[in-house]
Length: 136
Image (tube, rainbow, N blue to C red):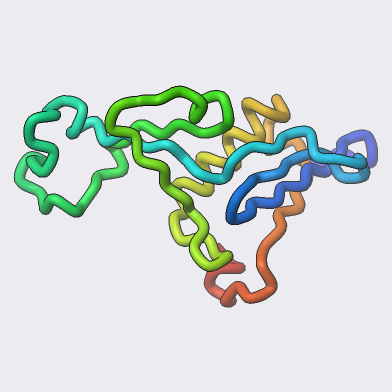
């Protein structure tokens, strides 16, 4: 909840390559990290001999509950077996909102060390967004 001028607004710009986060009025962002996420499908790790065997599901479908996500420069800096890099941005528009929320959560909690409910927000978006994208 916004409590007046003593609480600074948070500015987040999620781009195709990097995510920048910081406080309004500052000269530079505090956090700057890749806007890609490392994803490991836990089913592939459990059964590396047959990665297409997803317990009866189609080989191309991935359950979000079975994925472990790695966000940020430090988490992506290590080689991990079966890790796939996923970008939530395609052609300048957010296409995977679950990954976008994970990136925002990393910016709030790990980089800025804040509770997002206690600060007003300014989120940058492309001007070519559709009305449905803007509402989401």
